[in-house]
Image 1: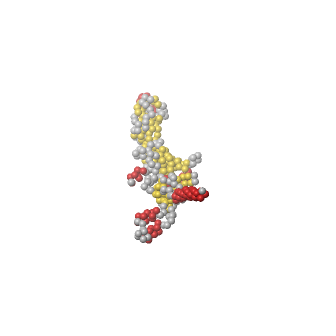
Image 2 (image 1 turned 120 degrees about the vertical axis):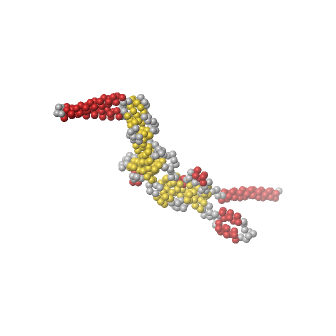
Image 3 (image 1 turned 60 degrees about the vertical axis):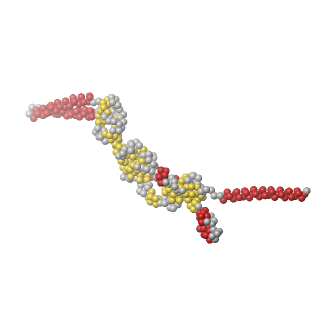
Length: 407
């Protein structure tokens, strides 16, 4: 009885020990598998850093106005008799735009002209009598004064009659009429706006730190905002710089002129302005998508080859070649092994000092050097030391339609 019990106990210990040992072995192998398992490499797009020619500039927002533009007002009161223009019509200097009722002024002018003729005749008669020594000097002086007074009244009434007409002071394009036929208008009433759209001026402000970089005749580029941010199709020239800096805003006002033959610029419109400065060579710049901003600073991910683990690929291939023919693996297996042992790419997080930005690029002042391969897309879930695979078939710095055309 005791012998059977001992045998059963031994068998139970063997079975339980085998189960415990199997579980421990399994857990150890699972932990070792996950410890040695490499996560899949993240796919990124990169760009190789190289010096470029940088076109610096002063960015600003400006307001467009016509070089010659005015709201036309009437000088006298009256009833609108005729409107001689239509909206958006091009007119020339001297063209009559509005005619007010001038019947009374014409009648007064005709009467004054008749009196002026009579006074002139009386003066001629008095001069003739004076030559004959019949008339006195007093009569001549009185007749001359009367004739001159009549001419002055004629000129005054003619000026009042001219004020009943509103004429264009210069060539340009008129806007929408703000009056109607038969309407009584008072002096100073705005009738229509007249704008010369051939040449426009743009007023904008720049910080006082840039005041020394501004010069008369300097080139500027302008855009209306309907184009891409780096496309400024209009070219102009600085014509005026305010010699005084606003003490409240610390800004200086600048005025530029730009030709507008196609009429794409409109008075009152806001535009993006860039004052062109001399080009700079050997500037390190990256696409703005490569730069990441955090609480600790701005940084980029630089792709670098990792150190090869174990025996180098060349040594592995040589050892394979030295094996006997019957023991050697196929050539494709050797190349596969060499490829597996080839150093892979890893990321290195580098903090940088960014500078100026323009046309989708950002200047890098410190942190990188020429030849570095920097990640430009796909860095949302990246971390320092992570394995990556480079795929430059997609370039975020170029529009999608251009990339599709090149495929």
